[in-house]
Length: 322
Image (tube, rainbow, N blue to C red):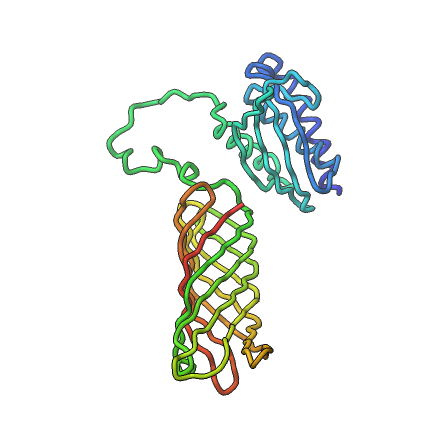
C-alpha cells in the first residue's frame, strides 16, 4: 500500500510537471478519453495507471481526459490488481459512433521502480500497433548487410500475439493402438479428448497448465467374448513448448491421474479405477486467428494390476486460444 501511495504521489507530480512543460504539444495529435474496467475496481490503482499513461501519451502529443466526450480516441484500460503489479490490457478505439478498434495490447506493469519503464513500453507498443506514432526519417540508406540483420524485421513484429496470458481449449478425435499383453484382447479403439488450460506465453517458450479428459471405446478382438469396454481418463495436464515468435503450436505434453475402466456385463456396467500417465507431443498450424489445426501423439500407460495397459494415442486436434 505504501509503494502504491508513493507511486500515486510521484505520478501526480510528474503529470503536473509534464502538463506545464508541454502545453503546446498536449493536444497536437488529439484528446484521449479513458475508461477503466476491472472485476475488482480499485480507485488508487486506476489513478496510478491514469497519471502514468497520461505522462507518456502527453510526451507523444496526446491530451488525456476522463470525461471529455468529444475526444478523438477512447482508451479502455482493463486491469487485474495482482498486488505488486497489474495485468493490463489497453484497447484504443476511435471515439465515434463506429468505435473502430485501432490497437489492443497486454502488459504487466509493476508497482515498483520499473513502473515508468513498463508504462512507457506499453504506450509505445500501443501507438505503434495503432499506427499513431511519429514517422522517423531514415538516417541512411540500408546496406546489403541489412538484409541479414534484425533491423529490417523486428522480433516483436513477428509475434503471433502480444498477449502473455491466454486461455486455450483443445479438442481431439483419433484412435488408440494397444501393445503388450493387452493386445491379445484388443489392438485399437476410438478416442475423443478435451483439454482446458491457462497458457503463459513469452516470445521463446510457452507453458500450459490445466486439465485433460479422454474417453476411448475399445474394439475387442474377434476371438474375445464380452461386452463393450470403455477407458476414460481425467487429470492435470502440463505442456511446455515454443513461444509466440512461432506461428505454429508445438509442445511436449505430460498428463496423469485417474483411469476408469468400464466393462458391460449383461445389462449393467462394471467400473474399476486405476492410475494412468501419458506423455507425448501436440502441434498445430494456424487456420485463422487464434485457431489451430494439428494433432496429438501420446503414449499411454494404465497401471492395471496384473495386466498393464500400454498404448499409443494418435488424434486430429483443433485448438482455440482466447
